[in-house]
Length: 76
Image (cartoon, rainbow, N blue to C red; front, top):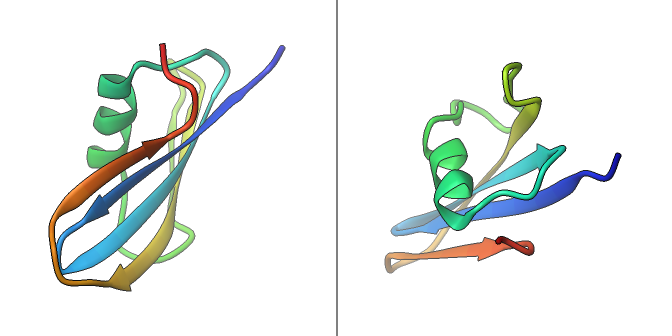
């Protein structure tokens, strides 16, 4: 079984990144939802969504100066 990997990147005054691993291909909305609903207290925090077998790891924060989002990975 293949896994799909995505990065949900949110930028404002800082840049936060989550690594999302899923056994199925996700839509852009699903990637956003997993990123928004997951832990981001400290680097390395992991949120496991057992029902969907999706794992989200908070990769950390970098500081910037404007607001943008970016999704990396092949969505359907």
